[in-house]
Image (cartoon, rainbow, N blue to C red; front, side, top):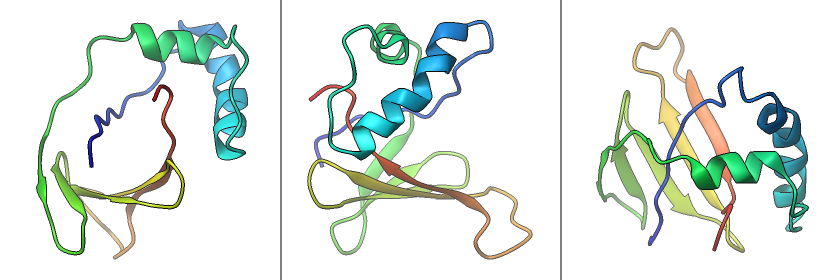
Length: 106
């Protein structure tokens, strides 16, 4: 998969980006285009400090990302990706992050 994935939190001092993030997620989930003035998109596009992790091919057309507890990416319909990152320390078998990802730029 020709993608670059970064996981990060929007800091509290980016009030406008935090406020517009929910609108951005809603638009992307509907396969819609966010409004041109969306501050969450602006924040993501200008962000240059992303954490890096090694990635390698896994079984069944998945990609394994070696970050924290490790995670898997796989392609879904359309331009979506599914991401699963198991928690580094798990109390239960399903502890971790389960997410549907959409491209901010294509």
